[in-house]
Length: 268
Length: 268
DNA sequence: GACGAAATTCTCATAATATAGGAATTACGC
DNA sequence: GCGTAATTCCTATATTATGAGAATTTCGTC
Image (cartoon, rainbow over all chains, first blue to last red; front, top):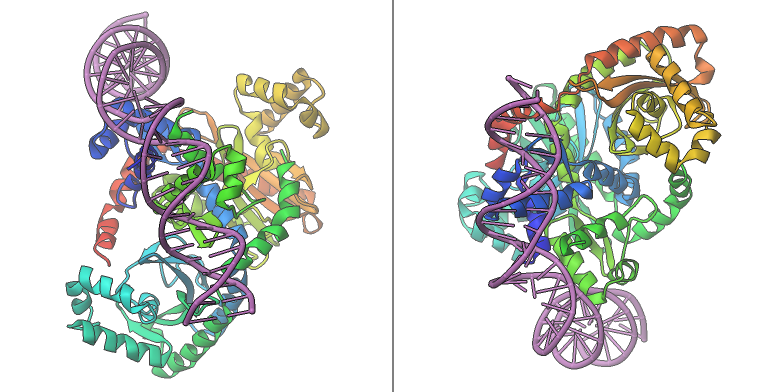
């Protein structure tokens, strides 16, 4: 582990559970001396990844906020998906939230949300919030298309959790369950992530047909009939198919941004 | 400059102008060897700050998206400001966007936006987008309350720009202009940032009465009478006064989040 | 389904710097 | 302005970062 990796591991301390760290606590946690912890913090503060809000109180910094904006600006998938998600939302009768989620390594994360209930969205999964990997239609439809090797690793690491969520009591069961999902082409879940909610999800692939994410609708189960679930499932599948994950066009996206961006550079 | 600082300086390469970098370009830009650039990239990829979307194509990574979510969750100011901003928005007759902006070192950045024109907000300043420091009501009302030493630095670094934006031809002029703003307690600007827009901004202070940000309304000038500007200015000032920037209560905020967060930890 | 060019990792000797501990300084609530 | 706690500064030693090029892998193309 290089010294840069140690500095970077400071960032991993900051989580939803704990958003404020002191130099002393970090030193203890990372097994380094206090002076080293201060050196780490100073490096991160000076590049904006951390911010010292108060004597002995360090939090994640402005560079993160700005970089997230940069990611949103440059993301070609987001640009393609947004209007599609709004369309999908218009097809929903009652309260609904549409989620775009993405697979990163072995995690599923919400990338974008569109809702018609602005002050109280049906789903609390906003951009950046990690989703449970084994529960909910959003994640399960992604699981369904993972390569066997990745599934084997999951089974090795979390056999109990997989069994507990009803995905299968053996690895063969697990694969069989996922095969059914693949045949359907979509996944419907009830109350697996949030109480009283229904999720309907369809897979999103990249140019090489690898699974990269999912598109889903979250509804109140009390407001939703089986009939409309079927109708919406078809719409979600169609919408997800429109979202082709073209990482490579990112180059063109950045060229497209250049004029506006150059104007902004001079903007002080 | 430590080696960790060099690794962190890689992140600064990623900007709105250029969102994709190759190891080779980064090596050239940073004056390091190709193998060192790969080592840097690997460190950043393994902690999620970068993502390799394709052979030779590195972009900002998932850790940034997730950390931004963590910041939003833990931010006590955001929690206080959101309902206030929604209230303010309801007081606007036509299309409007309400912005919460924050001062970081010598920069102003948008932290949150509420709008009543969801698909085409009146202002394109979303969370994370840096604002010009010298133009627009949002920034100028912050300038107005900066300590003299900071203003002197600004004048030293950007005398031409300050004169060009009409803030003053001499440092004395500059200070006099800002004094008027302070006496008003708010700032109105027309078309300084975006064409055909009016900005109305009021200052936000922390517990020690230091300026930390601003709250502003952006409107279409064509739809807005002088009369309603005055009415709204009073409302913005009142709303901004409600938002007290209490960095220290961040501790309590994190305690408040713990239950939900712990539940999520077990969520895989 | 193998070829070839480009990307990426590996290896290693040397130069550079990260580290802990404590002293010195600074910040800040009271 | 005082006193405690936070933060920076200092230095010798142990550890690691670096570049150059060789070795390997990746992936588009045929």
